[in-house]
Image (cartoon, rainbow, N blue to C red; front, side, top):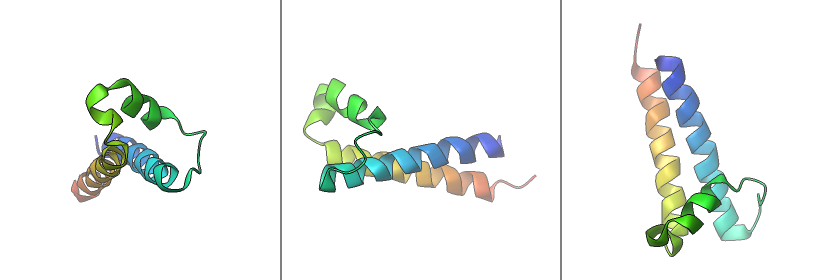
Length: 71
């Protein structure tokens, strides 16, 4: 379970961070997963930067939870 949390959290952290950088600078157009999420959900369309920040924070929290679990 620890590895799954860390892996999924790491992916979310990278995607969220790339989404923030893309929204601010226009870089990383090839990481369009979160762009599809924000464009297809009407509520998130105007809040794309905030959505990417939330995705990155959720990923970070998942990584930290995975790190704190001891076996």
